[in-house]
Amino acid sequence: MIPVNEPLLEEADFAAMEDAFRSGWISSAGKYVDAFEESWAQYCGHEYGIGVSNGTTALQVAVEAIGITSGDEVIMPSYTIISCASAVVRAGGRPVLVDCETDTFCMRVSEIESRITPRTKAIMVVHMFGHPVDMDQVMAIAAKHGLIVIEDAAEVHGAQYLSGRAGETRHWKKCGGMGHISTFSFFANKLITTGEGGMVITSNDDYARRARDLRNLCFRQDRRFLHTEHGYQYRLTNLQAALGVNQVKRIESIVDRKRRIAKDYHERLSDIDGIQLPMEHSWAKSVYWVYSILLDDARAMNAVDFANALRERGVETRPFFLGMHEQPVFHDLGLFVGEHYPVTERIAKKGLYVPSGLAITEDQIDKVSSAVRAVLS
Image 1 (tube, one colour):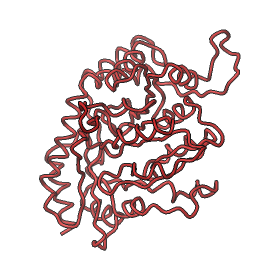
Image 2 (tube, one colour):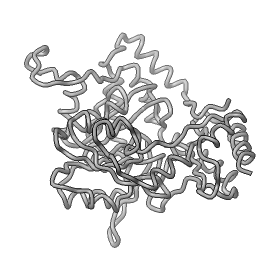
Image 3 (cartoon, rainbow, N blue to C red):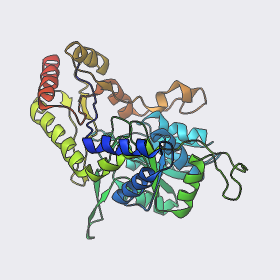
Image 4 (cartoon, rainbow, N blue to C red):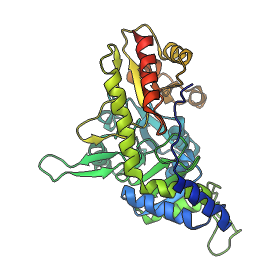
């Protein structure tokens, strides 16, 4: 079975982990935590990095660090992982949804303003499958209405966005470096991995201080075990950070490899009728976190049938997300009942992604492509 993802680690990664292990700093303090936080924040274009236990806890910390509380609304895409909406609900806020684009599957920015109310406090951007959201438009809307932008950049390590309006000098900016506060996951299927792990990054002093407090049980500086606020134990370990430090140093080669994998698939699959493959806007440099295949409506086969047929041929896949508005756990809370987002609903039924991890070989890409072609012929 060709796995949907397999990380690619180098000797330097193992050496750093051994160094951390032998140093005795195996918990949430040590030189690698500091180095990882600083190097990743600077690479993305922010001042502060706050390492946490995973991408989900990064979202929780970010949402609470900016002060989301009871009654506050956060606009976000329906098409995303449940962690995004759950973070807002757990803080006492209310997620407000928009549909996604048909080409990139990123949130439909044109719908944001229609969803703003007096209770809206933030926009949660989710860059999808390695491709950026059109951030200039988002930031302009946020500035106009006095909103905070949370950037969920879990799937876009190293991706870039060409910022600048017509007539202005345009600059490439790193995803995760454009919002007021941003979050990352370093799960095993991400471009940079620490096994589990995540990070919050920001240039706002108050958000950074608050995020550090929240990840560490809100210990007070004047008396450690006196608590005046609730916090979490969401710390990143020195061992995990050691695994990430060297990957930050080679992030550009990691990005190049992911883009090459996507190019190889394009060359093998682009002539098949009735499917939609990943695309890239002129203002984006995608990192193709996963290689997605969306079946046209004209094909009777759905994603489940497609996945089963590929599995029979030795290819592991993963389905697309199910929209937040279709999640029973939110319906039980009275959220999103009766709401419909047609693009999200369609792609959830017709889309999956195939093996495209950093360790995939050209021979495996050939076998996957042959299996896809055989199933869809």
